[in-house]
Image (cartoon, rainbow, N blue to C red):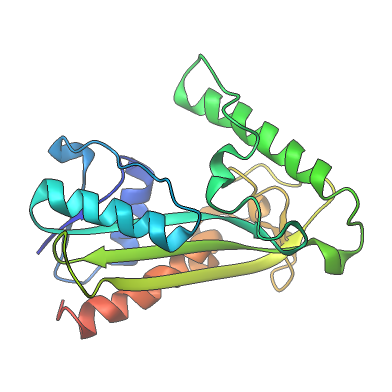
Length: 211
C-alpha cells in the first residue's frame, strides 16, 4: 500500500520510514506527488494532523499519514502547543532554510524562557513534547487511526547541548539525565515523542489495516 506522508520534510520521511520499517507500506512525501501543504488552522494537534492527512489523501486519491508535534508547558496552560515552531512569530527571513530555522529557534527559546521567568521551581517548569500521528485510508475515512506520543521533561533556565533543534537544548529528560540536545540521534529516536507515537501507529496499522 502506498502511504502518502503529509509533509515535504525529507528528514521526517526518513525517520518515519525507519520507525515503520517492516510493514507492507510504501511511504512517500506529498511533495514528490506535487501536493501542496495543507492549512493548519486548528488549536489542537489532533485536528491539525487530521486536516493534513485528509488533505493529502484527497489530493493523492489514497491513504495518507500526517503528524503534528510541539511542546506543551504546564505552567503556560499548554503553550507553545500547536504554534511551537513559530512561538515568537515569524522572525526568520533571508538565508537558507537551516539559517532561518536557527534564527527562529533562538527567538522561540528566548520567548519561552522569558515567559517562564516567574516559574523558578523545577515543579513549575514541567513540560512534554507531543507527537500526534493520524492515518486515513481515504479522505473521508470515518475511522482514522490516531496515535499520540508524549515525552515528559523539565524546562531548564538556559540551553544545554548542540544536537537537535527547536526546544531540544532546554528540554531536560530526567530519566536520561540530559537535555534532548545532548543526545545522539540514536538515543533521541529511541525515546522521543515521535518514536512513542510511531510504536502505537505500527500496532494500529498492523491490527486495523492488516499491514
